[in-house]
Length: 256
Image (cartoon, rainbow, N blue to C red; front, side, top):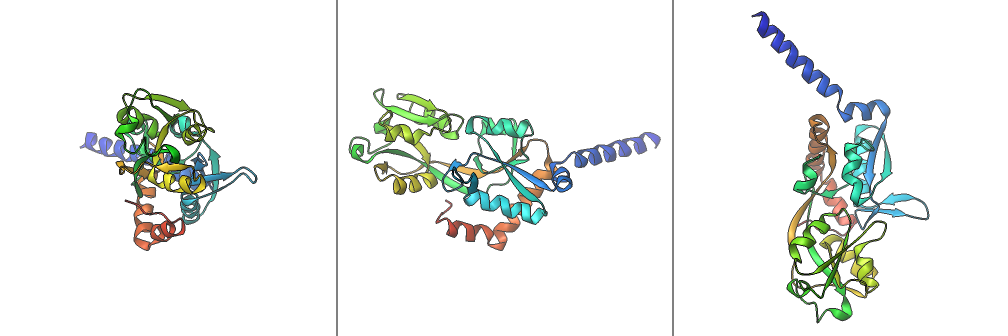
């Protein structure tokens, strides 16, 4: 009986300490939600260099999350190559959306997803006849640009095993290599691609269909179940309330 009481007490203390260690408690205590974001993914997170202010779909999501928690939001600059490390090193409490991949999930936690997209290649419009399919880009004479640390960097190796892969480091971006003629193509989310071809009319989406349906979610510390569960429930509640539907319309987006 005595051993049973000790066991129950130990479990209770462990649960209490786990809860106390949650980011959620620290966020409420400090009155601030720290959000890691790259600020270079249109229309999800964009940083205005003139004002250093952020805007975009994910930025609106994070402002709403902070408001509902009852705290201020602080956006912490991050880079794709180190965005996961920022979570593990406690530089921020949560990230704006990233693609959920097995590699990232080894060290970071993911909330429930709230957006699904496909992947498409971008090439110069003048080269569209030459590069009209995914397969036409899988050639040893073709150079595919990627941005270091992105999920597309991993996928490019899978989609284009014969091609030369060229990784660039942020703030440089893969599509800029295509624009400059230093690469024949790059791959990106259909979400970003649709924005880029409007902003840069010399770019075109390869008309061969989308591949690799992927899910976006927020990253949180891997073992903080309390914080993860809180945000995941918040996402589900906001979906039910129509918040995400309204936001998708605001940014002219359509989740797959």
